[in-house]
Image (cartoon, rainbow, N blue to C red):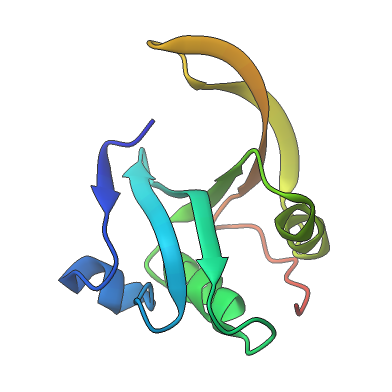
Length: 112
């Protein structure tokens, strides 16, 4: 699924605002994308997710959100992510899941 994980509060995580005062969960790098598998905002509706998305894109990376819960799905739709489907880890399991993708060149950004 990931080329490598990005853990909360590591230098790379801090560069994009993925810190333990704002989020719980994990993300990772994969082929020019940050993959968001499971994160929870510790301070909802404060703009931290928008900031995270902007910081990721500012680094020149796209964003993938795999199998989101309804709240995250609504955010992805609002921000212009494209819905695709596919296996998250084809080498382990070929179950098909929803994957929302925002390429770095996509410019449609709604506010959440």
